[in-house]
Image (cartoon, rainbow, N blue to C red; front, side, top):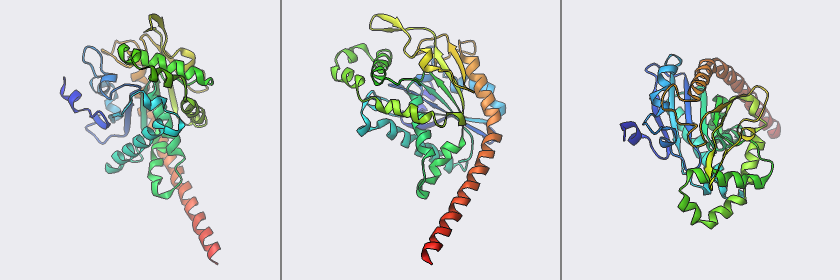
Length: 315
């Protein structure tokens, strides 16, 4: 095990690279179901591309790269609305990332998220939550929404109007990321996967309202995975990369589990991912600086309005 592998925390944020100069952009990696903040992105030859490959390309753009880990067991994605674990993960990611950035006096620094599979739903829920923050006492969490410039989704399901289809999709994802014996010995798990998926459906519906705010790149798998003795795509192109105005799309010649692992810079999909991160990290600072000017202006107006209301009621 490499020193970095042992240093990456299972839960929370771990910085895996930081520009020698003051960073201008934060890139945050978020794994999916049954994933890990290191193992999800590490290839079989030991390459951990967020730290081993990206710095050489992104160096001039002065980035800081972090991985985020959370308890991504299956119940996090299958409990019903009364136990909205995804929302809990979203709150934790928002609070942890805001704290990490505030401690370093960089809460207005641009953010780019890289997500694999259902990790994309956690990021979506985080941005929905941070956008809707209105109480002044937790206003600092809104900085995550304001500062987010782009998102790369690798194998994240975006479509699914039929709740029953979510159950089938989750079963397929579980079949490739969890031990077969565990699945076969857990009938309660299979039952849970077939129901209570309105939460996942609602996340995508709510996120559609703010999609145009971000630069988005959809990546979909093109190689099938073994699912109960048959070969099929876990998240097909129509779900992982739906057509949308202003959104980039591309297929990666890998299966669902391996589409986020790159052996080297010749691996299928790596150049497209790296180029997107290069472009986003280059363009983000000016765009996010302008957004913060507007955000600060809006907050001042809101505070002035509130003061006037207080005085008018007091007279």
